[in-house]
Length: 156
Image 1 (cartoon, rainbow, N blue to C red):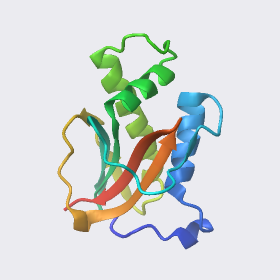
Image 2: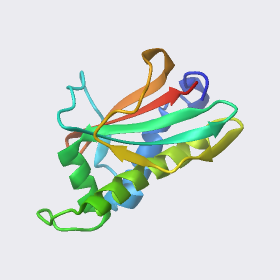
Image 3: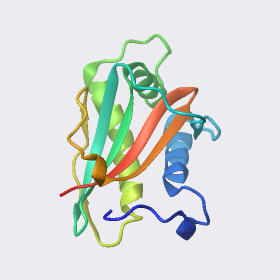
């Protein structure tokens, strides 16, 4: 994860979108088509939640998911097949959002030459430390009309 993604290697298709689309179709929605690229400038995330995993190895990196708390709650309900108004417990919330970050991160790891192991997923209200110069790729997505950002970072 030491350089930006060369899209030409993937026929011009964004491999991060492909990974996210497959994860959401299989794990969360049970059908394709509910995840798309965000059109236009992505708004600032209010009441943010962050979930990430780090890839250890020769070129350490981070796969970071950023979204609003309400979106994260909806993802949790969909993943756990809960009703739309069902109360989400803290443990379920952390487990579900962490699992999404873990699966996306595991698939991103497959794109990296000589990757190491993934760390355990982390889920917090606070953005983990990142430096703008270490941003490798950022993709704003719309899941059921809600903003979800997946970003890839190199780590020192």
